[in-house]
Image 1 (cartoon, rainbow, N blue to C red):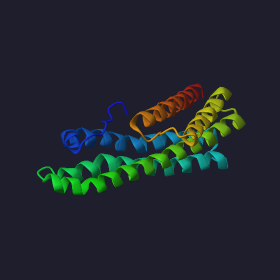
Image 2 (image 1 turned 135 degrees about the vertical axis):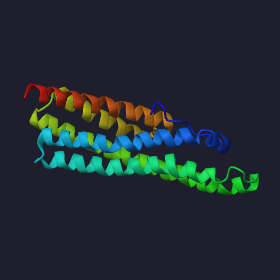
Image 3 (image 1 turned 45 degrees about the vertical axis):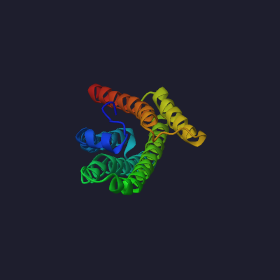
Image 4 (image 1 turned 180 degrees about the horizontal axis):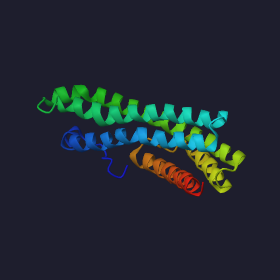
Length: 190
């Protein structure tokens, strides 16, 4: 998210189209590794627990949504607009509805991902509290983060803006790194 380019005019998008494709490709490549880590979390917490399995399935669905968002915004958009580099201003004006549609589609996938990630973190955090396989405060942190994100969306905070998405991802990454730390710590002890 630090490298994620911000949008702008079509001329600006042409200029940064390679950077858009590179940053989104990095994100697409990393997604399966994240999902693999969440499978490890699911197994460590309790792979027989319906809440833990439900969290993994929810995160899996969210992962599909975030991959679609990255593909639409990071691959489809630059490939599409690069076909119009030498077009007339009228032709460029004619593709603006597509660009608006692309933004709306991307936002929808972002919202699905945010909702799924919140739901998964909430379920895993409940399992943490029920099983005690990780520190209780970590379970409460996950519940707090999920409710803050959900409450913020209900209150009208726009998570699908670049700044909003960065804020969400920051909280999500902090929780995920802590989960990885506790998983690793547990593996070293046993």
